[in-house]
Length: 302
Image 1 (cartoon, rainbow, N blue to C red):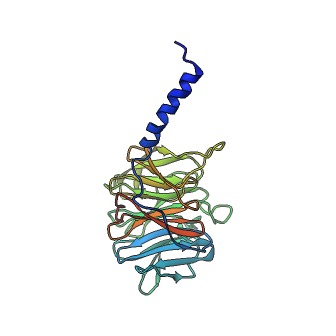
Image 2 (cartoon, rainbow, N blue to C red; image 1 turned 30 degrees about the vertical axis):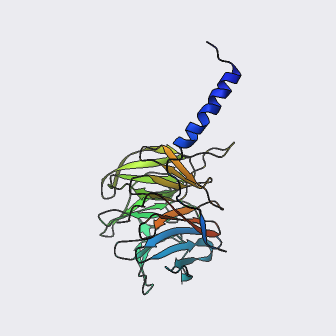
Image 3 (cartoon, helix red, strand yellow; image 1 turned 180 degrees about the vertical axis):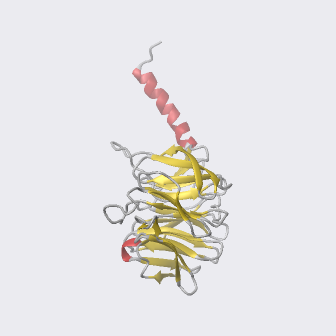
């Protein structure tokens, strides 16, 4: 039986509330708060269990620290265009310097140790973001942003720094690999490419050994455009993925189903969880740093 246009429209209108609810099963528990504004391009938020939040301001080559009392100070003004950061289990601040290397800061003395600066004798393009596995190894993305041309590594890919210091390339070319995260059980690694709408997932067969790369989910695209990808990402204790996109922070279940969206005054670049219960979601968004309380705790880094 052929249905009338008016019947079809009416049916869609009735369905819309259900679709909306299905996509918003994870919602903030409070209002979005402004922590600090007035920066140039904020990135790389990471939480120190001692109560400090670190974040970067890439063009100003700065890493800032937010103290428990809310005071924002400059941790370093010579970050070499640090993008992503992460505080490891030893209290070191790991940093992806887009000038070509991955380093570790002693947060007390601010002394830096270079963890990796090249692969097969060539500098990295521009390390972007990183995650640590249970073996103490570091996966990091190496896209084209702020990289010399032609690209030193010729392709954009993901690398692994073993605890021994050995560096291996663990993926083939990816369209601007950006955010990266590991599942709670460590068996899956997620990558957010910035130049495609499909987000990726790999099986982790062992330290630095990825197989079966495939599409995990597809981000919402701007009207009239396609291929708009993700930027930063973080994961919660239940395995939900939080991607920063042109819409805000899009949330997907471990099955790749969209379950939430949190919007901010500016377009987000990166995201992390902090606070004593790790339920405070911090977002770096262009000129500002924002936060909002969420119902599920973020996964604690290894």
